[in-house]
Image 1 (spheres, rainbow, N blue to C red):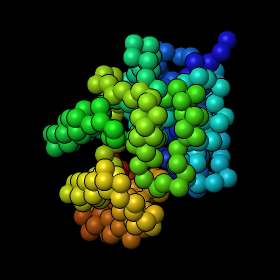
Image 2 (image 1 turned 180 degrees about the vertical axis):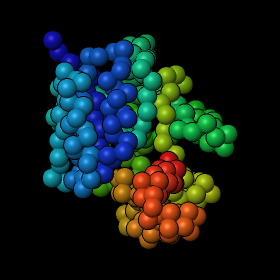
Image 3 (image 1 turned 180 degrees about the horizontal axis):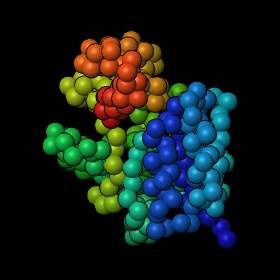
Length: 291
């Protein structure tokens, strides 16, 4: 029986998030799909933890790419795919169990060449909810323009349409999805944005860089895209680093400072007498800072 959907997930040091997304995929009510994880050479446990889910899917591949780069990895996954539809997901996405079935419904109803969805924040924080609301509103206002804008964590595509456009532009280090949709519109292909089902979008970059800095950088890059301002790739990399999970890890120096704080709180004697307690407290603090 032919597969209907190929799900392509590029990864780079995503040992923490990839298992959660794969768990979501294993619980989908729609199951006619294959999973292709394309890794850019992770140095953590991404491969081991990803392959641990292989038994949960009838079709699963974990590919280690010989070249690192989101666009290259996505294009490689597309070339290896067997289905007429492609779904590109980010490793830190979360999706409800009815997500794929919902996409199938809208694909059949609207027949777009490309389709994406509204987002939910990955916290219950009111500030994050407000940001997600504004992002969804902005995407709605732009969706019928010549240059529609969407958050590039989720994109459903007809494989034929994707290949006609020669996939993602591998020279880009940011905005590859919006560039693809812009080229699609220029060739009279159809792009749709739906408000349900939504996917949960990770706000980890916002937490790492800060809300104001993230909004400032994203606005600058979006305006540059709208006015066709070509930014040097090194400047774009500095503005919007794409380093996989490593970018969001806590530095060694910061870990040492946290450990010193733990020692100060509970005292060195307690550390000697209760190493398990110390380790647990340190681990708890680290998890809170990463989340």
